[in-house]
Amino acid sequence: MEWVETTGRTVEEAKELALDQLGVDEVDAEFEVLDEPKSGLFGRIRSEARVRARVRPQAPPPKQERRERRRGGGGGRREQGGNDESRPREPRHGATRRPSTRPGGRSARRGEGGDVDEPRVRPELTQEQIDAQMEAVRDFLDGLLDAFGVDAQVTVAMSADEAIEAAIDGDDVGLLLGPRGATLDAVQELARRALQQHSEDSLRLRVDVGGYRLRRREALAKFAAKVAAQVLENGEAASLEPMNAADRKVVHDTVNDIDGVSTSSEGEEPRRRVVISPA
Image (cartoon, rainbow, N blue to C red; front, top):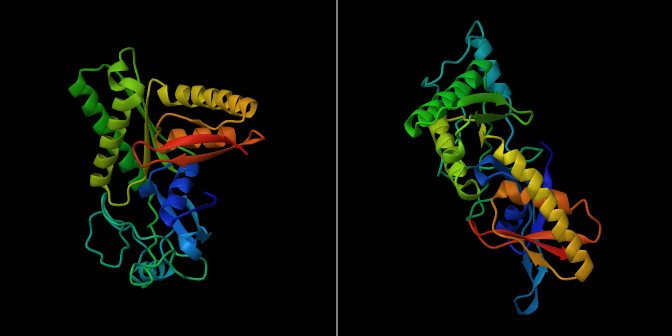
């Protein structure tokens, strides 16, 4: 996944803009702070914060760990749940995630006291571990469908960007959608938490019901293009309704391909929205 670079009045604002472009939650992204904001006279901003970010990749284990495996004899597979203290671990949901390292071994950011965070590398997952995570998602969603009394089929696959994609299809899946996909978002969050409990090194997860997300992306892209045309015509900025990061990415991607208009994000989650303005 390529890096995206954004600027903002604060580091947090620049990070939010990067998440909009990536279309993921902060837990699924890693950041590098390139420049801190600098203040001028009378509190004015002399230069903005600049960060770059990308979707957290699945990196191979460190060379030292691979050498230790070879010295251990046989190159056997590491068992899940073992007590190997040398294995790098990702924090569970809700814990502070340390950023990845920059080229050259420097940390992505500094702590409040100026100390450099130690680098962390996400262990490479075996196919067996990936299959186990996919099966865990399938089992959880099957159990959820039984609890709802919904007769539907669950399909789980890996996407090109190394995320687990689960699709729920059937004749009576409207109950799992809710107004504007609110229930679907809740189902996805529950499935994501269940996956994190199953594995500390859980993959990213996307859940769709009856092709709703695909249809919404297409409709949202058309709507964003229509609003952009209105902004071009009357020269006035337009603020859209609050959206999640994935929907905001659709708007940003659509409008950024149109000359004469630009986008920005305003507000705090979950009321964060996209503003389309004349360029």
